[in-house]
Every structure is written in C-alpha cells, then in structure tokens.
Image 1 (cartoon, rainbow, N blue to C red):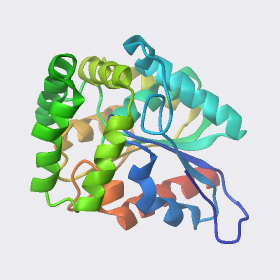
Image 2 (cartoon, rainbow, N blue to C red):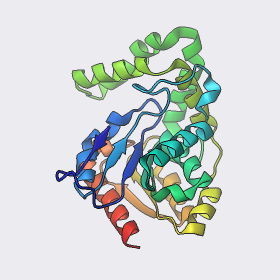
Image 3 (spheres, one colour):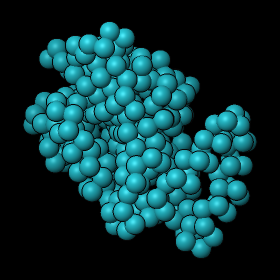
Image 4 (cartoon, rainbow, N blue to C red):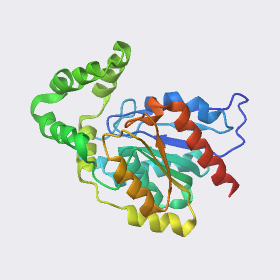
Length: 262
C-alpha cells in the first residue's frame, strides 16, 4: 500500500511501515496520506504470511531474522534508505534489519514495541493462541475469543468483518511461527544501541500512554537504554496510528524531517 504527495513529486526520503503480529498494511491507512503530504513516498506492507502476502508452510520461516531479511530486501528494491517504522512485533522484526545493516535506514521508530518478548495481557493471549491453534483451529478461536472481544470493544461491524477476513487469510504456519517469536524474542536493545550509536542513526520510541502490550514504563526504559527520543501518545493504547493518527503522524514527520536536516 503506497501513498504519494498530492503533487506526485517526492522531495524527501521514503518511509516504510511494518505491521505487528496478526496485523497488516491496513493498520497504517489513517496515517499514510498525512505522512506522504510532507513530500515523501510512504509504503506499508504485509510481511510474509500476513493477509495478502503468501508465505512458506513452515513455522521456522517466520523468525525475526528471516522476516528482517525480507524487510532489507524490500528496502533494497525501493532503492534508497528509508525511514523505518516497526509496530509491535514489527518492531522486533525491523530491529533485526537495522542491526544487520543500519545503512538501509535514515531513521528508526519502534512503535508500541518492546525490548524482547511481549509481556502483560498480550502475552497471555499469545500463549492461548499458540497452545490452542493446533488443537481447536482458527475458526474456534475467532468465534469464541477474537470476535467477541472486538464486538465488546465497540468495533464497527464492517471492521469486524475485515478483521475476520484478514485473520483467515493469514498463513497458519505464519501465525504459529510469529506467535512463538513474539513470546520468546530475546532482548537485543544493547546491540541496537551500539549499532545506532555507531552510525548516528536517529531512533524514536513511540507508544500510547495506555499500551496494554509492553508496559509504558518498560518502553520508557528502552528509550533510555537506546538514548532515543520518546513520544507518548495521549489517549492511545497499543495502536497509535489507528487511535491517534494525526498526533502519531506529526511525531513521525518531525523525526524524519530532522533526520534529513542533520
């Protein structure tokens, strides 16, 4: 999914947005055109096995390292270093891309992500999925847990229908592999700090004040360890690009423009 400035002329460097576990490129719809309006090409994608991108049938193909290599290949195809944003599990994936080759990025944003394996209530959800999926199947999980949760949160019926369509389009092996990764990923903040500091890469840690995945305090500490800029989005939870798109887009654009002026 791509957005361009209204003039179709890109005066600034491109940006690449990577979604989280069970997410997709559509998670960034609300910010795409606003980000592009600053004069840049903005791309959001599905990782392998997500929604409209097919993937292998082996869970081992969905490690952070494998997925991070995919992101590197996409950046190389774009042809220029990008402002890279990873949301949630996408932050763990894109971190691998940056650690392996920081020259691919102009800046790096960890959005609602953490230093390692997920914690809190989202950890419980992930472990339930990992244990139950092979036994009862996705249809059962959707009808007994995911759909009722979405309805209880007041998600409009047309969005619930999209979420169902997206969930069932995911690779089953991908869901298993990514769930295992997000529940077991090691803390690599020190490696990222060393790499980013060595090349002067601007890093932003951005999250909602009510994040229910990695605790806000945990993300604040990660920002300190990275010597990174930190932006807390008021009123947002785990999906700032959906819940507070204008504030989120403004924070990203500010970082990107400053990185290009440096």
